[in-house]
Amino acid sequence: SAKTPRMAVSMRNLVSSSFILALLPLCSAAFSGFDFSRPAGTSTSLRNSVSSKYSTFIPSPALRLRGGENMKAKLLELGQDHLFEGLSPEQSEALLSQAAMLDSQLPGGLSAYVTTARKLLKDSKEGVNPFEGFSPSVPTGAKLEVGSEEFLSMEKIGISAANEAGFVLVAGGLGERLGYTGIKVSLPLYLAERQMCFLELYAQHILGLQAENGNQRKIPLAIMTSDDTHELTVKLLEEHGNFGLDESQITIMKQNKVPALIDSEARMSVKDGVIQTKPHGHGDVHTLMHQSGVVGKWAAAGVKWVVFF
Image (cartoon, rainbow, N blue to C red; front, top):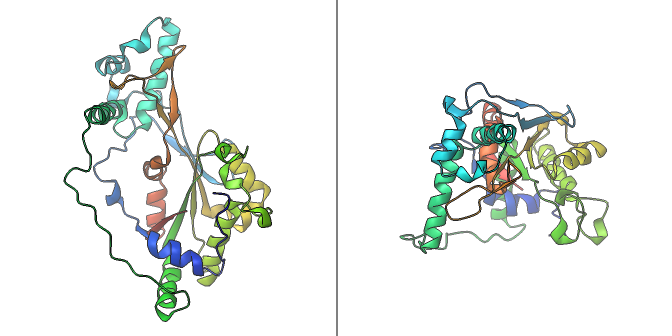
């Protein structure tokens, strides 16, 4: 919300309300059980079509097929026959190239995507409760009084831990629902602080934590963008000198899109020989952090915690 109160750069509010509650271990085990591999012969690169300043991950087009499989045979096996109806040989070839690229970007490929979608859609249709067998409970917590000895003790621990943390910002959306024509991270904080936008506020938090730790290291920031926000986010950073952050501590990850589905059989939407796609949503950030190399890079640099803005 554009009316969110400004958090003190002294780190008091940041540490108590965000840091203590949102520290998450950074470890490869978090991604166990998922196939993040890319097809043989494909590649991704840390490159930026807009600016070479930032470490930027944009998936390169992957035209080789996963595991050498025939893409058309795979699509037919997945019940996607309708994709080829009325297409010319040239259109079919273009569609297969697009399908190969989508296959390379999805964990487990198109097979896993369609299979999982069918199960979820079937369960939803049949009223299956995904939480069956679970019992809700309220976790034990602590109520801290600002300025108390306990609060100050925890604040000190949180500030120290920030020196081994990395921050992540999901910034793939526009601000239309808020009556704003730009990207959400460029929204002004509130009427009295229109000169500061949310991205600047986040940068100030990071700079403040660095200062509290004697500027021993530059705390990394990873920003997930989309087709709608990528160029505008880069432009916002460039026009404002990264809001004080060093270029080397910023990584921009552009998320992929996924096939849109038209029915409970998980048939893909197609128009004029092109598979229709949609944004993958915020949940894509964990996969993208792994695929882009951010997890490995941060772990090698000694990052132990991840904080999501």
